[in-house]
Amino acid sequence: MRIRTRAVWLTIAVSLTTAALANATAAAASSTSRVSASGGSRIAAPKARARPAAKVSPSILLNPSTAYPDNPLCDSLGIGGSFPNLVTVDGSHFAKKAKTVTVSLGGKKVATTTSATDGTFESQFSDPEQPIGTYSVLAKQGKKKQATAPLFSSAETCWTANGQTGQPLDWQWSGSGFDAGSTASFAVDGTTLKTAKASTTGAFTKAWTGACPSAGTLDVTVTGTFQGSSQTLDVGTVKC
Image (tube, rainbow, N blue to C red; front, side, top):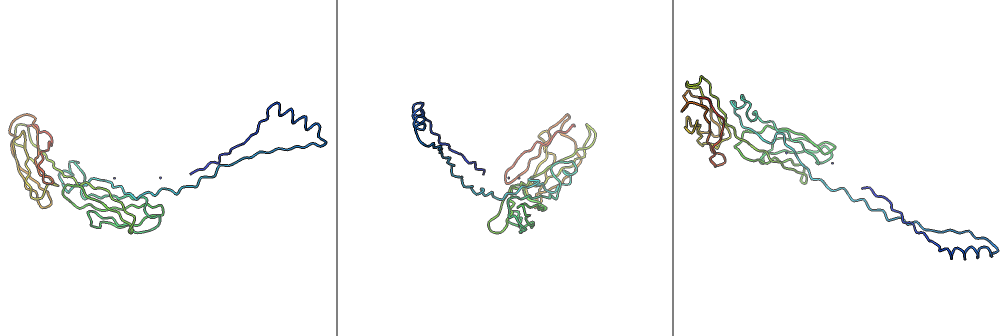
């Protein structure tokens, strides 16, 4: 994949009517002594107690959050990401002192680091080549502080065709992240030109020379199996 109280004053005032004021003046004039008096009350509202700051749970952010398998052909074409995938883990709201943080991927430890005095940390690990799917990254510190984030493992397939229009072309096709042992097919305009069997790591590479099934700008598709499900992917067009 950071309380202010304000005193409120209540002032009580007493008003005298005109008649009462006249009576008070007359009484004061007949008195042998003068009395000057005043009174009042200012009542402050009770101060609110400061509430403790809400606890913020630890969290981590992954960059990148999608990992791509090893595929030199796709890398050379700028498709997907490069392998190995170096994943950066940024953590926050961990212990505000130097304390060990363990980072694991799918239950296997991949890195260790220590938190800073502001409760943050940064760590990196190389994501191993994995079948397509979602994997959990866990950052744990002691028994109470931990956070998780999903790491998505993607699949790739790419191809090239070189030559002259109307002539047999030199083809290259590769795939990675397919189901291990599954069979993939490469088709132009609905006609299968080549099939490939994925290795135990889900990868394959094919190269051949052959003509297109017909002339014109034709659709290219790849059919493969991912997480047990067969999918047909539109992967571009070729001018034949």
